[in-house]
Image (cartoon, rainbow, N blue to C red; front, top):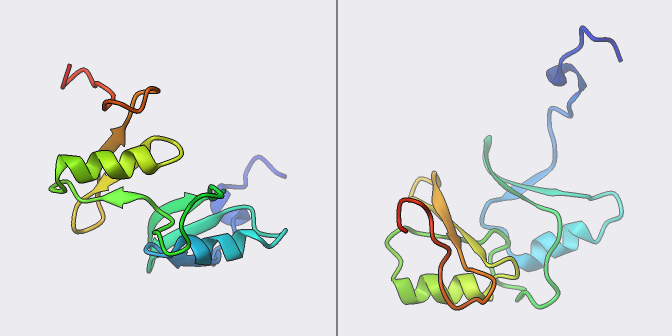
Length: 118
């Protein structure tokens, strides 16, 4: 590879994607292929996320990309976050813009503290 090349010259310019609201079952099916290492989730040309693994206990009809609206009730936010294998849920607005991240501490009993909330 020459030093003069840039990423745009090396990339796949039409990678396979799935809709951002793809279910666990649909993403799991794609990841079952030995050729598929990562599922890119997008709305048209807008990148929404990537999935490399699905927990075995994830329900087939659940969304593969765990997101929640910023106005979701705290009880719902806690329930969704505690159910996440990684204790994380992405907060997005109605336009799909990233607003933040819900995080539970390792005890799974309370949300992580940020400097702005501590």
